[in-house]
Amino acid sequence: EPFFPAGKFATDVKIRLSYGLAGNNRINDFLYSSLFASNISPYTLNNTLLPGYAIANLANPKLKWESTLSRNAGIDATLFNNKVQVSLDAYMNDTRDLLINVPIAANSGFTSQLQNVGSVRNRGLELQLSTSPIIRKNFKWSINFNISTNHNEVIRLSNASDHYFASSGWGAGNEFLVQVGQPVGTIWGYKADGMYTLNDFDYNTSNGAYMLKKGVADNTPAVGIPAPGTKKLKDLNGDGLVNTADQTILGNAQPKFTGGLNNQFTYRRFDLSIFVNFVYGNKILNGDKVEFSNAYAGSFSNLTAIMNDRWRTIDANGVLQESAISVGGKTVPAGAPPATLAALNKNAKIWQPIKGGNYLELDSWAVENGSFLRLNNISLGYTLPVESLLRSKIKSLRIYCTVNNVAVLTRYSGLDPEVSTKNFNYVTPGVDSSPYPRSREFIVGANIKF
Image (tube, rainbow, N blue to C red; front, side, top):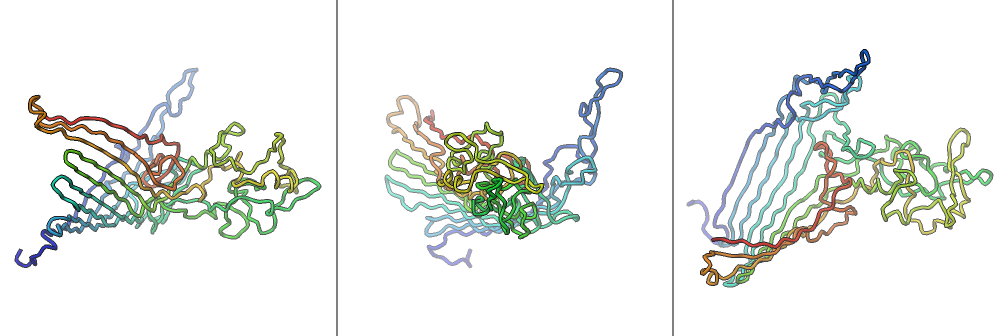
């Protein structure tokens, strides 16, 4: 265009604007009506077992499609004499009339109902960059890079409440909070505070009872009766008891940044491709970390190696050093004197497994940083000379070898940071519960054109 300044900095620039409204009907059919199912409640009449019929879903005649309003502004540019291609997009998407299983009163006979409630906003930036920093007669290096960030926020819920709790299907339930002003995937639970030590108790030499000192929070309502060496949670409201009132936000499963980098090299007839992807700033609910650090199956549980340095209640001779007694109508721990337990646990670094009670209560110890950098793919190929193929009427022949899932750099302690195994619905992402390990693949092949 005449108004665009000539020069080598930018050889092509395109500005894009888009606006649109799309619907979503991805729910089961006939949910607006009451459906009956047989054999839910069979009963006996005249010594004959007859099928019973019951309502399988709570009807909602007001159901409709949810809709997403999308707004996008972008720019594509080719810079520096066609050496660099850049694409930048900014977007804001509002999803309205969300289809969510909303908790309802139990006297209805159901625990939840699918409703069109509230709205969620997603806004963010996406950047793509392509360049070829080196172009020679026998060698070429090309780079493709992308990075994106997304901010998610619940804008509105139902008229009855500005929040509700959701369960992913793992644990004791209510591990996620859905609240106006918070992003979807907000993890909810207790704050970890290490373990109870001998200094947290007064010891009664007459009956061997361990009584919590004044001012030390009591975990009984949350995970069970405290004892030396048991898990300790923070009393956030300062009332001396750790219960549901002390639960708080532990993080979010939504990453701050995601992206990837692909490098392609060509030297004569050899070609090499290296692709890495990354995620930064998300949290993972490590369910296995909780489940397999506790005696969930009584005395027969197998634990992970992290519990090798646990607080022990059985000495080298197999003698149990703890018990429970009643003091003033209250059950309290009892056992060996403090000096004996201190000697037995001089190298203890982690609490003893929870043997009963709420062993699957979530706390911040099991909510981990899910950031990672994965070397996702390496592929090396060689294309045979055309001259050597003409006799066999083959136009081209390329042989290659590929390795997928080469390595991953992460501080996450689970099998794979790229995991979500219990997402019954989209408000409970990022739960790691007994996934099958991601395999490393080796592929050898050939591309032949006749």
